[in-house]
Length: 338
Length: 128
Image 1 (cartoon, chains in turn cyan, orange):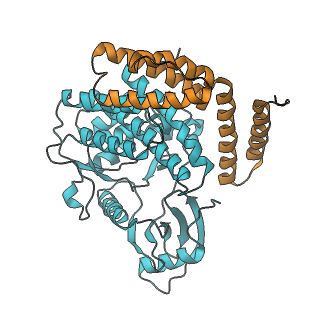
Image 2 (tube, chains in turn purple, cyan):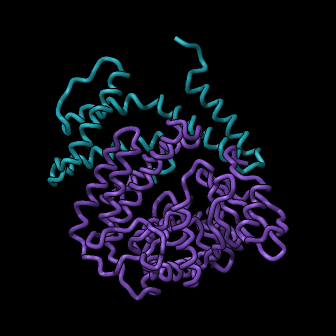
Image 3 (cartoon, chains in turn orange, brown):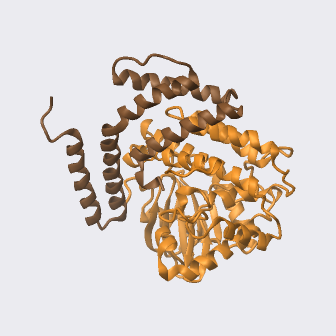
């Protein structure tokens, strides 16, 4: 069990009763599923429902973000995406933001997904399911979500908007100078204007779609999870984050989440959407997403250095920028280590 | 001079202990934390062995990118000064001073070599 656990079976039971507006509901089997840096997720059952309660720490100002996440999950669920059904978002009497949703069947274990021979058929089906569900999600327009969320300006290229955001984030988080990050970001910003203009309207993206944030069984995808990064942008953002090197686990040779190759992934999306993904735009997005992971490693290390969360794990993650930056250089130059 | 075991040998011993403890753990969270601790000592062990060579090799390469300078005496001072030269390099990249193809090619050679060196220390399994 994590030493940062936020909840308890009593807190979880109270959250279920509040979320279902059922003060007498009997809540059984509260069990910690995953303790993360940001949230605890707990399983809990009533007689009728298998549920998940996701709790934020009391000090974390999570309310606005959680409401946006809830609204997007609801829209995605109503579009037919494989996703938990969101039931409630709000605060408990301790001031903790929590979300109540249905519990989905399946497994999240990334290594089993990427390597087990028993899941070879599931891998093929999963790519098709993910592409299908992403297309459904990407049909949701920001105007349908009645909560403020990050949206590129109407005349702004979503890629450029995301790159400028990373510049600001890098300046805020860096503990030491990172020339590869500087150059990678400059490369994206300089080359973005040479791309074919994006003709699709801005739409909702998942924001953190990757191996490890999806549930699966032998038949393929059962649920997309962890919607807290959702915002408005363009499809390539989700397609490229799925390809980021860190999320390939021990199948670095399979660019798309350690599950399949990049072309199979993009073609699956093109098949379901009827649209063409510009490979040049996709490449710049992949550069940017690997830069983004490098900046996240700085942020995580900083949490330890600033004693927000003393953790040798977070400290060590600070050194994972190096192999991520090597991927940035690989993507731009096409070089490989001799 | 210190006796043996050397610093690297001591780290290696603790690294091995943590790896075995990790493998024997039933609790997934603790198993992972112990593995991270073991891997982190591996980074430190490799860094002690190679970092001075890497940083001293970078110095003349940086001369060509941010202007020539004489390296300080002690390695500790060289490391600090090198960090300062990285700041200068980052400012120059952001200011567009490496946008011209020839300058960019020289920059990329430097970035590639130093990044490969960093990964040899931090995550040698990620070189492929």
